[in-house]
Image (cartoon, rainbow, N blue to C red; front, side):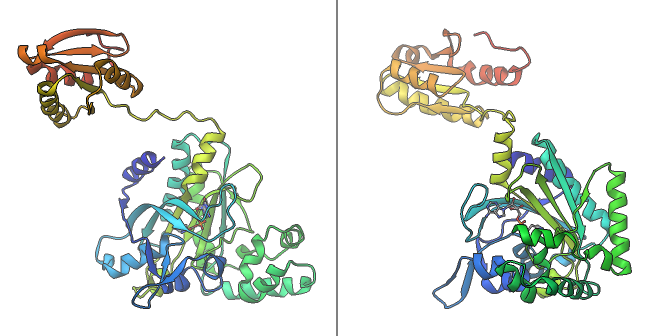
Length: 408
Ligand code: HAM
């Protein structure tokens, strides 16, 4: 999965960034939002020896934006395109697909407001799932407006929900006061019913946000990427503006989001940078992997070492040690026996490691300047000159796959 992620980022021109595992707690309170569940209930925060409050990163976007500001990345050609594959920590109730430590593959494009960039990020997220062969996914899309139009929408939402204060769950009662947008994605059945007829953010967008969303949808049509408008999609982090989206499996269950993202046009500014629009996405690797498993998608086997070098006696051991160095320098994956096991035991190990060739060096071979080269699957072997071994194995490595097998 990580290899596909890296290939994808090469295709789209995103460069890797690795930010520290922990940051000042303040960073997440300011970006993810004081009133979010992540900040209120899920952060692993501790005091360091200097008395500073530090937090194990509960998400990857704020750290990337912090790095963007701190390292003056606004001087680079914009948008700056970065990706990460990183562990993320959230103190949640552990269950299938929800862990206290998980890994995210995320990418962020910082420094441009063009909806075409939203489309690039959405397309990239979708292509990632396609490259992995995952089927039956849906792309959920919504726009939640900006500083200018959001307040009127939040007021409308509060007005609507204030009629149902007796019917909503206790959590939603708190949300109504502290974070009304989150009312929309409560999973409790009565709250779900009430959310059905709630006002929609798309009906409250200002002219710019409406135009942005319109262009975004038309570019997605142009790319023939089908999406479903989901007026309840608000996401759990406060920094989003305008576009929000998720890639979900169609299977029922609370953990059906493989990944999510959106635009966050104020985040860099809130962290002390210039006003800098941005958009990004992150997928949960464990959820992706369990989806690959559930769908029985064939995964290429891990690459096996090619050569196993066995020896008998001290002189042969020294020669084997020199040989293994030359083979590895020539780029041929090689394992060397260690210890003083019998030749039979060494060959058994070569077999169980799945190596293609065994190279056997004994006293006789040392004397003659030769080695025994053994085709492990056929069980055939022949003596060849030591000086020829590296170039012969290299040639076999190059031809491997073309001839459909190698005869020793
Ligand atoms: P998020 O939706 O909170 O977004 O997390 C992204 C993905 O990480 C989720 O869709 C899910 O697949 C996975 N995930 C989240 N929590 C857990 C967990 N406890 N266990 C397993 N997997 C989990 C963000 O974090 C944003 N930073 C995404 C983003 C990037 N937005 C803009 N750029």
